[in-house]
Image (cartoon, rainbow, N blue to C red):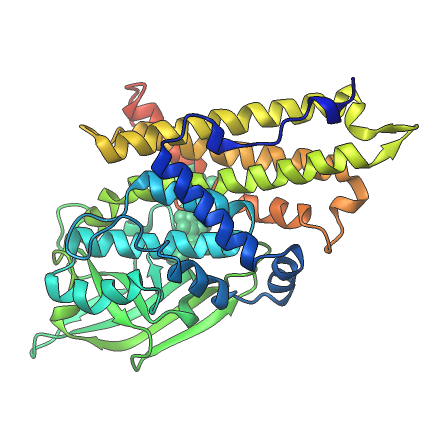
Length: 398
Ligand SMILES: Cc1cc2nc3c(=O)[nH]c(=O)nc-3n(C[C@H](O)[C@H](O)[C@H](O)COP(=O)(O)OP(=O)(O)OC[C@H]3O[C@@H](n4cnc5c(N)ncnc54)[C@H](O)[C@@H]3O)c2cc1C
């Protein structure tokens, strides 16, 4: 029997997905199959350009607002995960930009005032505005609160002056708004206190963005954002003064889930490409997928993919339905999905051998893009620290 006869394509919608989520997945696939071709994906990656038209199509299909309400709860984690897995498997860079949009949406749902929701959230929901999120700094992303040099100083007229530098900020130049974190108090109880979130229009005087040359996610540029005496009214503080970092940490559960979803999508896209290649490429008169060494690698990768899928589904459902969000499941899902993505893309590169290197085929893109979720939004090492402490009850390791 050949691998062709045995092969059942990955069909996540068949695995006990609720009718609502299955319908959403179908809708996302319809939007993507209408607008996305391999040539288009390759073109934007090679040109290192953001596919803003595709972003608009996705927003127009209601995939940013999803089941969220303007002045009510945000979109469900399960819905976001479905959209992001599908984007991860195809236009990965647009998927990464959607993770940032969903984060902005979530922060505004959680901490925005009614006025802020009208001004910033409504255009975000409609895809009429884009958001970037600026936390990381040159001296550190993991221990960013201690490394933070960006300062916001309260002025006599009640406004703030922000100066400093943010690093690796995805899509910053094309964003309409930035959510930025800056230190507002030097006498805080701990390093993670005394930091405030600000909503900053990107066009404000004093903001300069310089593109950073990166190896992956090339369809969404990352930027150094330089802030020089950027004047922001107090009405643009998002959430509580001096409590912004803790408020961001409270939404990190959603970031882990969404990072896991894109990584799972990358793994699935790479697996589908690898299986197609394994069936069609021949050596010694047989499909290369008939060689046991290659089959076993594919099998091990597919076990990682399905394990990550089940963890993600369980974690997203728990986060939506409670009673507790069970953040350790979300952390495990992120770790499992990052492992599935790096393993599957490595296996895919081996199976395609020289053709894996070819820029005209997608495996090298998946291989490069998969690296992102080994360290974002939280590094795998910090994720392990979290699971060790919270799930296994071991002493904090740092
Ligand atoms: C493509 C891309 C897009 C990004 N988008 C954004 C964005 O939109 N907004 C934003 O704010 N940031 C963004 N980032 C930044 C990203 O979040 C950081 O790179 C990430 O948080 C890690 O920080 P770092 O790179 O400074 O690594 P570091 O903090 O310098 O870590 C270096 C190493 O030390 C390890 N380490 C540190 N502490 C511990 C510990 N206690 N135990 C074990 N190991 C430890 C880390 O795991 C890592 O392996 C992006 C980065 C990239 C490359």
